[in-house]
Amino acid sequence: MDIPPRPAIGRRAFLAASAAFLAAVAIPAAAQDGTTEFEGRAGETVRRNMSGFRALRWEPYFADLRNGAILVDIDSRAVHFWGEGGGVYKLYPSSVPLSEDLTRRGRTEVVFRDPNPSWRPTPAMKLRNPEWPEFVPPGPDNPLGTRALRLSWQYYRIHGTHDTRKIGRRSSNGCIGLYNEHIEELFELAKVGTQVLLI
Image (tube, rainbow, N blue to C red):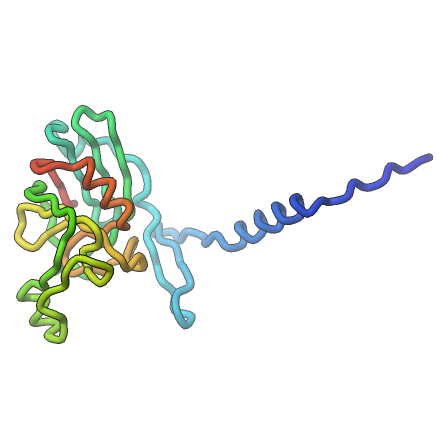
């Protein structure tokens, strides 16, 4: 009886199988609390939230979509946007305030869209960090990233960040941070008067 020869494994098939195996090994397992552990610098474990990345409906949070709506979920570290009329829905991972005393919750709205933000620390920030500069102009060192949506609450913004390690973590002094590419997209969708709810 003739035994058919084994098919040779080509280079592409081998690379594809290897990549699939490595990806499966590298994907971290989600913990019961909805967070995922990633290996940080010098062996430290960094916990990032994954549970908030699910679509939500706007109706439990807003009476209507007049001027669009932004929902910031502090606990799940996610920003949801619904366009006026409901035809557009976006979901973004975010950074949130470091602690509850820096966190503000409730209803506000976008009052100014800043296409090239500069940054000044608030008086409270300067008390906590007197070594911080008085002013940072727009650019790669600016903590507000490439765009900012100023809210009706003094000093509060939804803005970008050049430090992408902050996203998905408690890392801000009160504001909500997004990847620069996400704030640039949200900046084009939101307008002055867009309603905002932080929960």
